[in-house]
Length: 118
Image 1: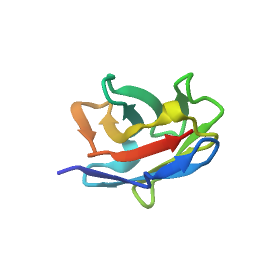
Image 2: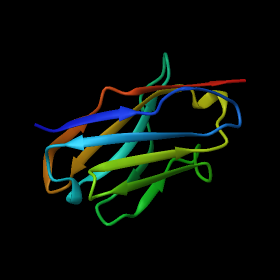
Image 3: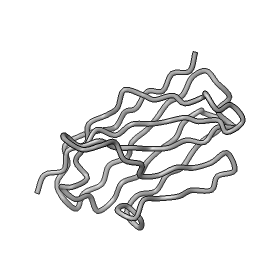
Image 4: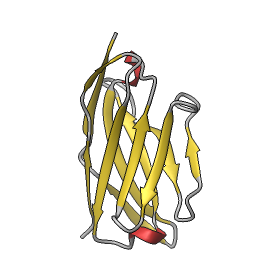
C-alpha cells in the first residue's frame, strides 16, 4: 500500500516562502516520478512541478523561477520550495507518485493548505 503524506502548508504573506514536504511509504520510491499539483476553490487541479527518477525536474510556467522541486531517495521524500509567493498561489497542494513501468500506479496524498495573504 502506497501512502503519501504532505506537510508544510501554512498562512504566509505575499513575497514570503514556504517549504512543502511529501513523505512516501510503500512502493519503490527510487524509480518513481513524483509531482506536485494544486487546486484552488472552483478550479481544476493543476500540475505545477515534477521530478523524475533520474532527478530531472519540470515546472509549470506559473511557477518557473519561484518554485523548486527536489527529492531524497534515501528518505523517500520529495520537497517543494516555494519562494516569492503570490496570493494566486493559494491552494491545496497535493503530492503525486507515478511509475511509468506500472501504468496503474498513480497515488495521491490528501493535500496541505497554502494560503498567501496580500
